[in-house]
Image 1: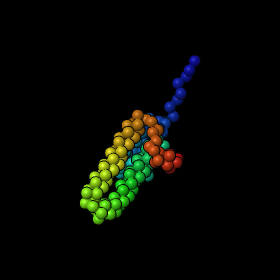
Image 2: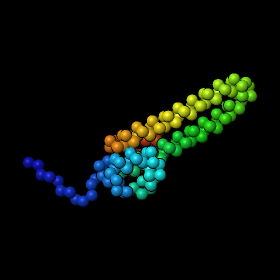
Image 3: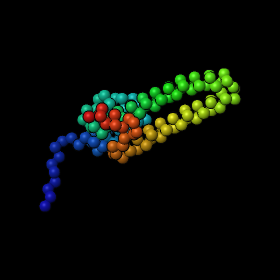
Image 4: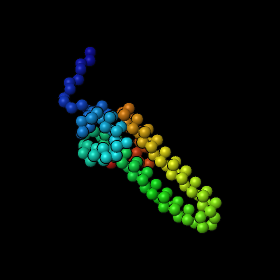
Amino acid sequence: MSYPQPNYGAPPAGPTGKSSIGLDGNVASAIGYPIGILALVLAIIEKENRFVRFHAIQSLLYAVVATVLLVVLGILSTIVSIVAVSISETLGGLVGLVVWLLYFGVILAYFGGLILAAIKAYQGQWFKLPVVGNFAEKFAR
């Protein structure tokens, strides 16, 4: 015979528990991805719910990596474009097209990862994005 376990107050921390801002853990984690300021707030104030803290930190790290990648790509593309145009205008135009496609690809990949991570967080999954997921897991402890 099985007896029901007593409820000792607050729900467990995790996707089904509450966040420090009063939202369900999965909801707070999911909306932290598209709303970066919320992820920043949750990363700072969340102490109890490790699930919410993990996704908030992962969202911030993901945005930082994407920003750094776009800045580096911008600097390199400017240098390469100047050199290519000085050689030939046709080559400069071709390089410009390739650079635009790279930018578009990085931005598309960023938003795709953002949407995927938000969906996985809403479903209550500990989904780790490539590169930043392991770092977020270490910082969320």
